[in-house]
Image 1: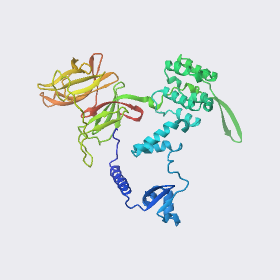
Image 2: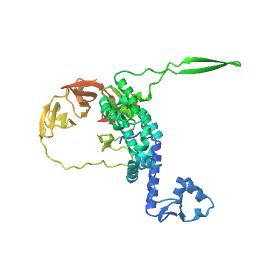
Image 3: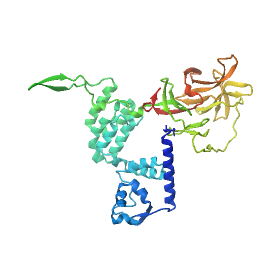
Length: 452
């Protein structure tokens, strides 16, 4: 995942906490300094009194009191089931705890429990409080509608009566018209409900540009003058549309395809459509000369490179079974490479005669290389990515005259180019953070980022 910004003052404390936790776990696993045993029915759990007292007010009060139980080595806990750790009231919290503590088995067990009973976790009022929120992290409003239908379908007889009110929480104006016609209006539960069909007519009118007139409410304002009270009416100029016509975007709908530039000085995200830059991370823990990859879950991981932290760590290796394929038409090194439309694009680089601007394309199906439109400038060590059906080229080194001499010198570039409609368009923007950075195509929520 992306490296988070860590306060240098907090880092030693976090390191000491890790040592303490690992040390206590090792002592417990090897039955060292165990001074009490929790007995729950027929199961026993060896423990350290110090850890129990520090982490639980219940055990702290027991051990510090004069109670007989506090001095025993074997402590019997009554009214506790050793096999019942997950209930509806704590399954979400335990799932988050498993993720926080990096305990896969705990997180997986809690997730399975939630998936089997998620319809039971939320009541009508709780569900309404969630799906009415602007902070809902969904990229499509169709997800909200489908989740609501699943919730009703779990106990149709009891929950159908809640459907008319809960539909007001769905922002149908954010749903495509085709989906609304085929999946919403034609839904069997909605077709059979005259009240809901009447409400959905407002949505159909809104799609045609016809909104209902806003009703103005009259407020009674009162003011005191001595012992007399004088009341006056005033018109409230602001009115509200029915809730079912709400079209405010959800929080998750602000995710945007961005070009992420990762270096040891921080991470910057660039929006080529809006030509805007955002600060993604200020962390300086990223190693120099690293490679990066993006997972299907939209997480990115810096790999290998020069590690700047302590203790020193070996660079990770990836082992593959290599297969010989057709060679490129031109031997080169320090080139840019990416996969675009199921083809491998190789651009620029260094040849036996110097820098080159040529581009080649490899067809995986036919195992053949073909020539492609040249890049406008000879470069090496350039980054190239694909995003939104377009190719982007970022940075690299070119031979340019310096300020003190007309003799060409290797110069690091920080510009961004885009290939579309059979030509290279640039320069989109020059960004200093592109120098020495790994370039990735990611999808990030711009509301979480700081605009530069």
